[in-house]
Image (cartoon, rainbow, N blue to C red; front, side, top):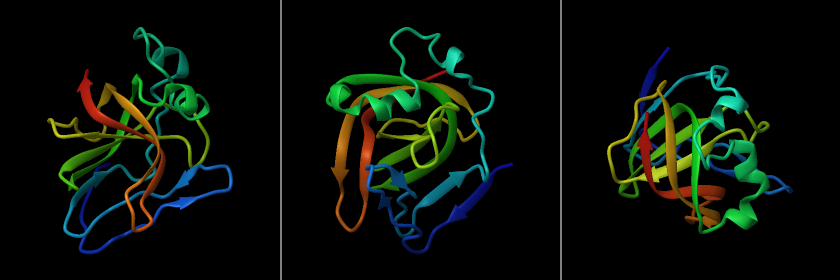
Length: 150
């Protein structure tokens, strides 16, 4: 089930736990957000996520973030949220069924066309860590200059 929501104010702040894991997501005033409530990445198994050469699971992105910082990374998974036009970019949230609460999705930022919520894609871009956008918007992992393929 898809739900479209037009945000009129900042809807959530990011909370970083002592382990550095993100809890929550960023949204800015006037942005168009599409999400799948209670979405599950069940149709993407960790084994199928590794089928494409050089891909990482979401859990691996978090566990290997220090060694992957600044490198090109790929993740195959479900698009669970798309936020248009935040700071000039589209923010695409991807889950693959790995990871734990607060570390079970990765945000990919792009200026290019973004995939639709509910689609299964391979996303790639440059991994950045401990990215602070100010005003409480902090990401322990985020992928910049992203592209998407089916």
